[in-house]
Figure 1 (tube, helix red, strand yellow):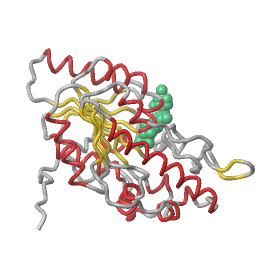
Figure 2: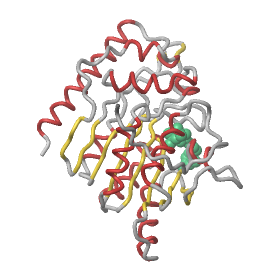
Figure 3: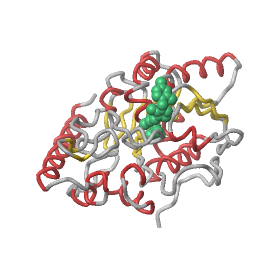
Figure 4: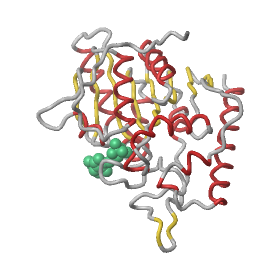
Length: 297
Ligand SMILES: Cc1ncc(C[n+]2csc(CCOP(=O)(O)OP(=O)(O)O)c2C)c(N)n1
């Protein structure tokens, strides 16, 4: 029988303010299991500020620092300098930010932190939109998806533009470690957090976090959607250590994207042609990743 490797320690308390089925809540729980209590988490404006710290409560068993939405990367550089000045040893400085606060509004601060080689872990939880403020589109929203700012009415048929290649942007900085994680695969998830924990330098974790109210599906389906996303090649699991790319889950032939698309209200308007176009993009991106794995040094 397989041996479960997920630490029993809980550093996220029950009674937090996340929606039922929130995969971003599960992501935080697993991240803290992997890192342990000697951690400070810097959280910008996003769902997680509401989940963790509605005054005067705190759902986490570690220190929390609230930072402005655009400055998580800068906050991590400052917190690391402070921890070093205080002589803290074996202390993890962690950012936990949404896709909007990372790939759009906070991209400059993230780039600065990666370029400075700040000794910290940046976690981007990707619910593919600005969810906390009412499901607006972000650079990470997939092409064609409904959001409140990319409606499906009149001539508008969801988001016209493609999802930003966030890992591509991060890998261009050649960080010590970067990986994609999915709470639907908790063993792979925790192994990557522990690997990031044990390295020094800038580390970036891109976490796939389905969002029931934003993606319009029922809350008990988050894990099923997570598994479908990876097994269809929509959110492949891979890691890059000093630029060397390795795909960490290759389950044979990819599943067609249809089941993933049909399970969510944000894609309800998709025609068979839309699904075909979505499928073609996924296949191209998967082939690019296979090439990257083969060619990376
Ligand atoms: C400079 C600035 N602009 C806008 C906001 C309003 N705001 C607060 S949370 C949020 C959404 C953030 O989206 P994301 O980072 O994707 O996290 P999520 O809400 O999805 O968890 C926005 C736009 C803000 N706090 N500061």
